[in-house]
Amino acid sequence: MTTRTNEVWLNDLRSTGTPYEDALNDLRAIIQKGLPYALTRWLSSDDPLFQPLVDEVTQETLLRVLDQLGTFEGRSLFTTWVHKIAIRIALTELRRKRWRDSSLDELTENEDAPPPPGLLADSQTSPETSAERSDMLVRVRRILEDELTPKQREALVLLGLQDMPMEEAAKRMKTNRNALYKLLHDARLRLKRRLALEDLNPQDLLMAFEQK
Image (cartoon, rainbow, N blue to C red; front, side, top):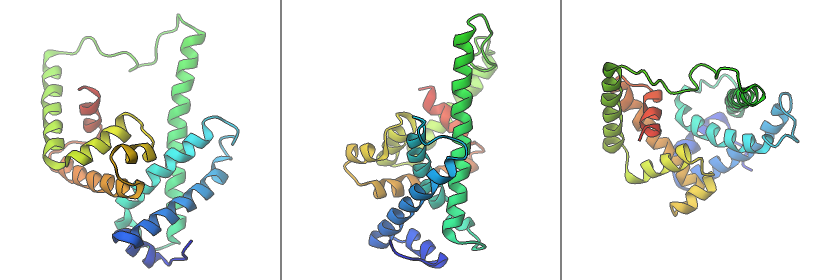
């Protein structure tokens, strides 16, 4: 593994070809080595959730780091900054997964208990609200068509909707894992800029996927 200064990390991750590939591989290894030690404070390594969580967080951390390279101010080691991002993502995912599991447990233990708020779809949606949602979905889908290449849309569907592992998605798309990270990074930046111009937020984008 190559030893890098903060500046070299930034330069390599902004480059292409071998420097980018090597830097991304090294950063992935650093995250996967450090994250399990941190997670054992909240989750046993014997828990079936443990390794899938490490893999999921590693993938999301790499994407988040690529998206946020411009925000790194150099006040710490680059790898320390990355580690903090990984921990924040891991705790968010852990809280989300445990909330979901807890809710399901409560429902199965007490079938007469009412479901948590928001679990059931709103069957009383007004015509005005339905029209607003339909208009928003049309706008978001137009953005996806305008801004993303077919490859970028395919990657978002495979990884974001079908929860396909990165390696499997790369094989399906006949590319490699690092190239797929770059593809997703570029897609996220383009969508972020366009959504801001359209005064939409990421949740609107998710709704467009979920309500096809």
